[in-house]
Length: 243
Image (cartoon, rainbow, N blue to C red; front, top):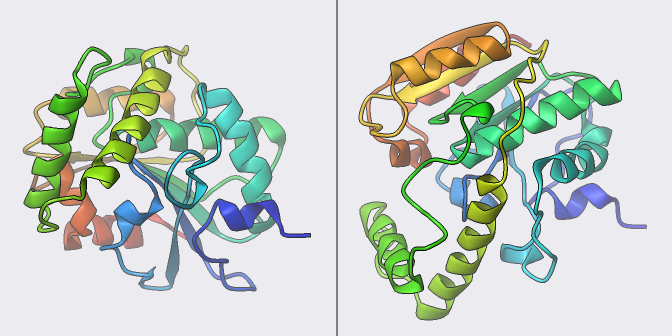
C-alpha cells in the first residue's frame, strides 16, 4: 500500500534521524512555489508540503477549514515526526503551520523543535491581504502574471493562470471564514517579518507573543523575497532550529 505521506511530499525524507523542515505553501500556491529553495540548509532537509487541489493533487477537493487540514496533515506526516523537525509557513502557510503544530500537540504526537512563521498576522486577526473574493478573474490573473514577471518567470500560460486562480479563490474562501480563538502552543516560535511588507508590520508581528515563546526577526525585502530563499531567512532557520 502506498503510504499517505507520498502525496503530501514531493519526495520522501531520508531515513534515519536527519533533521527536517516541513514547509507549508502560501495562498494560491503549491509545493513547487519553493523550487528556488535548496534541498538542504546546513544539515536540515527541506520538504515542501503539497496540499490537495493543486499541482499533482489537482483532482482532489480543496480543504475548506483549517482543523480538517491539520488533522489530515498530522496523520499523513506522522511517520516522519520521530526525528528532529520544524515547520515553516509564509502568509497563509503560517496559519497552516500553526494549525498543524496545535494539532500535533493535541494529538500527543512528537512536537516540532520550532514553528517558523513569515509575513503573517496572528490567526485571530482574521482575513487580510490583497486578494478578496469579489475580485474578478481578470484582476487576479493580472496580479498572478505580475508576480510571475517580478520573480523572473515571465508570462504564464493561460491554462496555468486559470488553475492558479481557482486555487487562490479556494484558499481565500478558506481564510475568510477562519477567525479562531488564541491557541498558544508549547513549541517555540520564530516570527519573521519583511521591512517592505505593507500588510504586516513590527507591531503585528509582536502579537505572536500571545501564541507562545517567540524570537522575532525583521529581514530586508518584501514578502515575495521569501520565495527566493535569501540568505537572511536561511540563516534564521539554521540558527533557530536548535536540533
